[in-house]
Image (cartoon, rainbow, N blue to C red; front, side, top):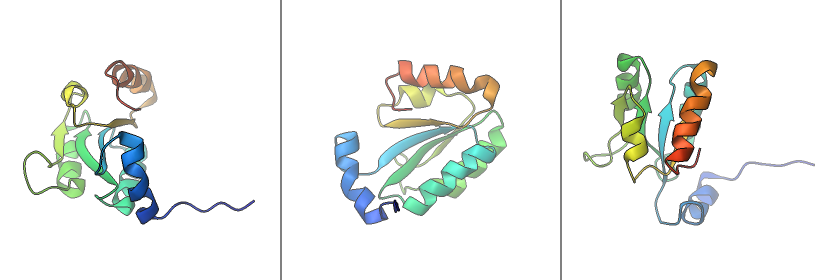
Length: 122
């Protein structure tokens, strides 16, 4: 049985059903190492009409700033990707639809638990 991934256009049409509004799914990404970059590449391939990175979160502030500058879409402050070292501001932001946790194994559970308690898709 062969299965192909949906196209960007097909995904863009499905987004309103997934998040209950028009526009892209807005993400916070926790952990910007190897696993985080895998997720970043996927978001980049989908494009900002489907997936938008609002927060790049890592314990390394410089890495978070670099990712925010490289992958953050948006021309105004409400849309720009922000670099953080603490996940809480992203969890408090009602614009965030989902949190991708790509942190190290020892921190993964705690971040997932925080995101779920904040009622974010994780």
